[in-house]
Length: 291
Image 1 (cartoon, rainbow, N blue to C red):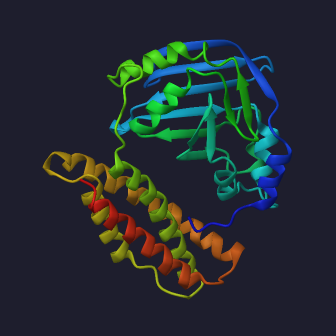
Image 2 (cartoon, rainbow, N blue to C red; image 1 turned 135 degrees about the vertical axis):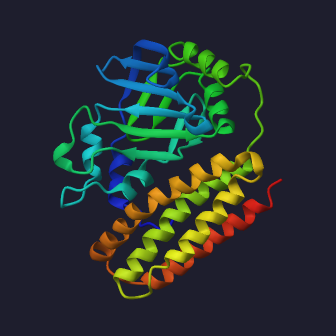
């Protein structure tokens, strides 16, 4: 990702490590609000953390919904009162479950404006793809859950036992079963981020009069990505859905690129557009080699 790391925010988080909380209760549901498995953990600090197992569009994911942390979240808004999405993603890229650590593939905060932030505001932190979800579920046998600088929970192993059992059953697996890594899916997740960055950088370059936005190139890349990540006759529907999902990213990424030109300036705008296009192409080519 070609994004500037927010050093001040990161240092603040390191200095303000989250105070440990102990789980005192839980509320578990099956098939709630479209999620096969759903649990909310309540802590001795009168706060909560919700875990959801999702199979949206046949992609399994594990989501952690964390609210009641407005004092932490308010650090990720700039002097105009707007959310700094890049800094938020950079600060919370990893979760510890038991003794193991896992990369978070989906990190987001709903509120865009600081004035809308309150104790109900929630950060969403996700682990995507079945081969990543299964090790995370296995790690829940041991105690502890932590996102550094945000939340640290003890007393989780017993509280999450029913959620683990439900999740394995929903995925058609036995507890402890080994799941092979889907490398094509891993490349797809890398591509999703690279594609958005490329569109952002192209829009920034055009706004800076460094180069034009190439709509034809974007359309060709979308087609190439859909054919690469969802090959075969049986995946026709998934290819169509994936194209649509990428196309929905484009207008928002263009707006982000225009905003970056105004706030970050135009230094190396054209060069970054070229570099980010190279990464997009490289991920597609490497994914094609996956059997």
